Image (cartoon, rainbow, N blue to C red):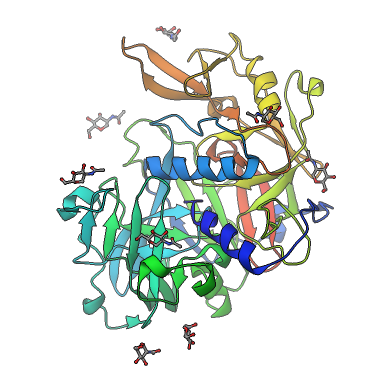
Length: 451
Ligand SMILES: *[C@@H]1O[C@H](CO)[C@@H](O)[C@H](O)[C@H]1NC(C)=O
Ligand SMILES: *[C@@H]1O[C@H](CO)[C@@H](O)[C@H](O)[C@H]1NC(C)=O
Ligand SMILES: *[C@@H]1O[C@H](CO)[C@@H](O)[C@H](O)[C@H]1NC(C)=O
Ligand SMILES: *[C@@H]1O[C@H](CO)[C@@H](O)[C@H](O)[C@H]1NC(C)=O
Ligand SMILES: *[C@@H]1O[C@H](CO)[C@@H](O)[C@H](O)[C@H]1NC(C)=O
Ligand SMILES: *[C@@H]1O[C@H](CO)[C@@H](O)[C@H](O)[C@H]1NC(C)=O
Ligand SMILES: *[C@@H]1O[C@H](CO)[C@@H](O)[C@H](O)[C@H]1NC(C)=O
Ligand SMILES: *[C@@H]1O[C@H](CO)[C@@H](O)[C@H](O)[C@H]1NC(C)=O
């Protein structure tokens, strides 16, 4: 759901003047021992996954093209990307929602919504593929409308959601906030998965989607009204003591009965999830973005948008032959694969035995499912975070002749130029706990023990 930023980037461009300097917050590391971060106050298991929607892939791709100007690489294989799901209770009603560190709104489809196809022709509700009838705002005794504003998100391929906005009691994993601003779209052109009914966004308020107009078509930078996302509200209300949340994503049985695996990890508020940890951890600053260029920046006017960090290096056999440091890497629970600089992906994928080959149609490295994956680790501010070989070969379904296909977990993300957005996705996140601090704007990465 990184798409929301597209409008924000143009929005801020109109309001802020800034030089196109790529300058970074120093990555002076703060080595910490895991014990410094206490066990979480609230933990919710991640119990399901659903295929990531094509539109999100398109949106990410568009963002990356926007950033790198000439990047045409396909972001992900068709059926590979999965989104992690959890339960969210709003106004006493419980829904399945996507957990997303790449967007910021909390929204639930509103009961009685109108469904459209992508050319805005009315369709039966079922066509939109939500996992429920929707949030019944009238049945909630705590729901309050936010008059004269609207929620509006639209995606590159024509998908859109719009509708009223309100405030209600929202609970996730026992963490309950009151008067959380939520989108309750009642117009939807959506290719849903039949499982989720909304989204829990955990990124920054800059990419929330509420506008000071009742007419969604008039939504613009000029009338954008950013608001506190769920976890920020929780911290401000004092219902969680510490200003951070953690995500542990288990590799699980990734492509076997994916929507029913009960053990896919945890979302934890205020501390660490209940997984076994190694002693290696590091805390690095989140990088801001230039409002004007969309490039990472710490110049005046730069804003936090995503959980973006600098990678000191990728280490693998042969890694000394290429420059492996890169800036502007988003840590995104909503992306399955790692997207690293093209040259890094090329050098790494050449080291599989047998070596992975780049498929020009998809832009992805395919690999023999029985290949041996080379060692691979991500260095963040001097600390090494190995990625398990089991995360580097992913089942990619079958070809037309029924042959089983696999792809590499580490794929090309574009040239290593200032504007390219790289991603450390679930392939990386399976091996660590990411702790996102919304007050200090830092990410702590802690190694998990092998599992
Ligand atoms: C990352 O940003 C720093 C600070 O602006 C810069 O010195 C460095 O060259 C950048 N690295 C890459 C690979 O772009
Ligand atoms: C894309 O960027 C790369 C690296 O900056 C450059 O070599 C290449 O010519 C560009 N391609 C196009 C089509 O502009
Ligand atoms: C939407 O429905 C209309 C009317 O049935 C149809 O003409 C149009 O092709 C459909 N658009 C899409 C994108 O499916
Ligand atoms: C909403 O808009 C209407 C019509 O412009 C106005 O009468 C009303 O006072 C507004 N309500 C709020 C809460 O701003
Ligand atoms: C609001 O939705 C309309 C379609 O309903 C779309 O054309 C417009 O771009 C959207 N605006 C924003 C800021 O998403
Ligand atoms: C919306 O815009 C109106 C008119 O400019 C203004 O009076 C009102 O305070 C704004 N509402 C919000 C919530 O910002
Ligand atoms: C997956 O689910 C189906 C249907 O529920 C079941 O028959 C099958 O045994 C499951 N496979 C695995 C590997 O659990
Ligand atoms: C992988 O190994 C298994 C068992 O050794 C074999 O059946 C299968 O065909 C191999 N797959 C590929 C893609 O080589």
